[in-house]
Image (tube, rainbow, N blue to C red):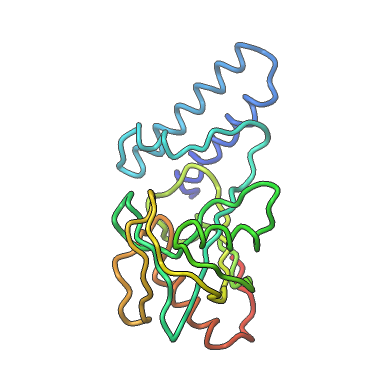
Length: 205
């Protein structure tokens, strides 16, 4: 049996594509109704308020394609860099959405600087994960590929900002509560494994 969450995401994609290409005002209204139904389904399935689900959607037009989320593993002296999100008061690998007109390597260096104040370099791809295939919470109403990179620390001191309340390094046995919408314990373990053995292949799923 197909997962109802998949149905809701597919309805959202159909609605987005329809709104992008239809020239009929009545069809536009119908696609808007399909979009509203998909959001109601997601709210019901995730046990979250409808307003919160609606806020998860990134305004977009055109043919729907997966979003790209970048995450960095920066390990110094056997400890990994984590940042504390003000939004949920939990910790994650630094990162965020990829920007247009920017390579993934450029994007991850920028994200680490923005979120931690640290300059990193030499990003190496560790994994490409389909967010929907793993237990990140809550489920998002759009498809996301997560790209994980190991990066070398170059310089700088940890600094907080409007989104980040704390920046620190942790050893693999002392990981704090994680922001499970952004990172899982298995992601951090994966980073340490690849740091221990650079011959490991890139993970794709």
